[in-house]
Length: 184
Image (tube, rainbow, N blue to C red; front, side, top):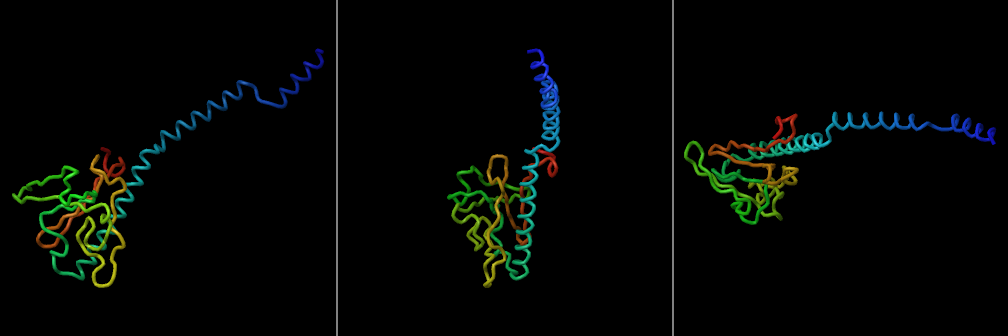
C-alpha cells in the first residue's frame, strides 16, 4: 500500500502542477491583464477612433465645398446667411425638438439653427443637413453628407455648418478624446 501511495505521489510530482504554481501563474496573468487594460484604456481608444472619423469626414466635406466654390461663384448657393445648419435629424426645420433656438452674435446678427429630416439628412443634393447641391452640373462631388459618429445633442457631438456674406464658411465639431481635446 505504501509503495502504491509513493508511486502516486511520484507520478503527480512529475505529471502536474502544484496548487501554488497554478496560483502564481493565474496571479501573473491577472497582473498582466490589469496593466494592459489600464495602459490601453479601451474606452479612450474608441473615443480617439471616433475623433479620427470626425477629422476624416470634415476633411472630405471641406474638399467638396472647395470644389463646389471653384465651380460656383454665387455665395447664396452655399446656404442662407445667419443660419447654422446642424447635422442632427429633425422633422422641424428649425430644430425645434432639439431645443435649439436662435441666438444673437457680437455684431447684433440673429442666427437660426436649421436641421434636415431623417430621410434627407445625408443627401448631397441640397436637401441634406448642408444646403449645398453637390450633385449639380452632372457630377457628384460628394456621394452623401457625413454625419458625426455619435450625432447626438447630448454631449454636443454633431457637426455644424455656417457661411457669411462673402461665401466664407465654417464647419465645426466637438472632439471627445483626451488626445485631441483634453477630454470633456
